[in-house]
Length: 504
Image (cartoon, rainbow, N blue to C red; front, side, top):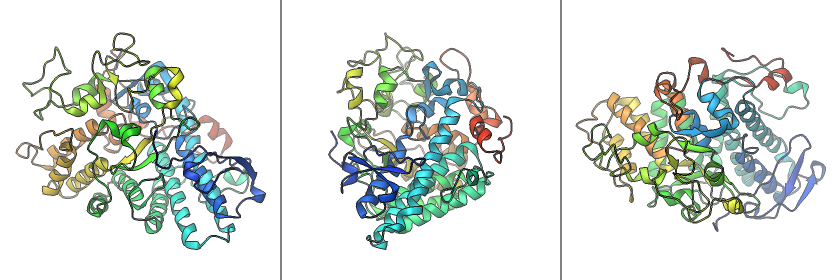
């Protein structure tokens, strides 16, 4: 069990204006009682408890209320990586182009983000009522909450485009009925929040669940890449790389379970869990409950150990595709016969033909009796992603140079992976290196909730995804309108000022 501080479940309920209280070291304590807003906002302990509530929003609102990176395998079900069984949360329907204002995931996702934003706004609107805490300390708290708020607005703008922008908490129901801002306006507000957080948060490694300067800078790189601000993104990534605060971890598979997450130098920000009261049950859901499987196209994306694609390598054996592959293949994909107590086996239930390995701890039985032991943290940002984002940004800004290859090679040559370095004679121009980076992101970050958003920001989802065959032999569907999701029908009904996205 992890020994570092873990954010414990503490719900901030905007409607009733209640917070759960906790002890001083709030990230490592359970909530003890409820207090009303009338007696709140008096002490540093109150601020720490309220801050814990904002962090707790990262867990979403149950199975169907997760934002993009916090239950990654599910969101990868909209990409070429994962196959979500049972039409869970309407994901499999959405992967076939059946996305409507009434789709479960659409409504859950939208409201999950705004509940988190409401919690953050409530905190920021009230923090200065506490006069017993130094401004410098309160500014750090504000920076953390602005970071969380920016993260949720980024989820919204990359999913729905322009959305209603609430910079403070609405004073009543009528004032919450506003038109959506433009995507540019939302991005500007996100940048403002992130820049504020960068200016006040400590420049230290990420260890205890609190966002640090590097956490915010890494997310800002994603924001800049989404806007194709290549030079700014490369510069910011270079600052992280030069800081010495983060590095690649030497045990890739352990990074996704408890034993490898304590003070891990690669993890830059994560959604924290603690058994038994704040368990993640992610591993239980995706394996024992048979929610998520992997697509064969994802299996085939991994190179052979010679660094060549399976279409080129003499090491590839189509009769046994599980030999001579990139070590990350075995850390991400279960091999036939690799069965653990309580988990589905290859012979029991395997609708896609490929079973997942990442984020599973085979030392803990996957049956229901142990479901709530699953409390390893879900990684939102890690250093490998920063290296690959740097390579992408630098390549797009000015083409490949030595620093681009060096960043990619760091990821490929980490201990335990040790894949061949980039063949610079073959990948020697901007276009070919672009394709190489995109491939490397897929195999390095698969089942982490990144791929779907990568395909959309690269603007290739509508041409690439329809080439991917699903487990039942049908092809995925992604049309131009799907770059933006529809607004939920219930929210359109509640807010007459909200106008539906085109095509829905």
